[in-house]
Length: 82
Ligand SMILES: [Zn+2]
Image (cartoon, rainbow, N blue to C red; front, side, top):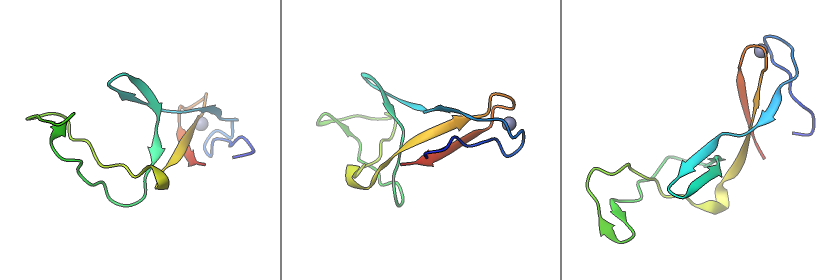
């Protein structure tokens, strides 16, 4: 996006940002991934773990970073991929 989007409801200029994806050791920028999510299995660092949060397999080559704009008036969020 080279121009800042405007809120379709309020017509106010939207504020640029992103939604952090919280990880074990910090946070990453959320990415868009093509296709359906595929389970990464139930092992964690080689150990079989029961009842842990399911993760999905991610093919980095197809992912796109997501930039999310927020309307300061109504709070509407709009996301765009690179
Ligand atoms: Zn708005």
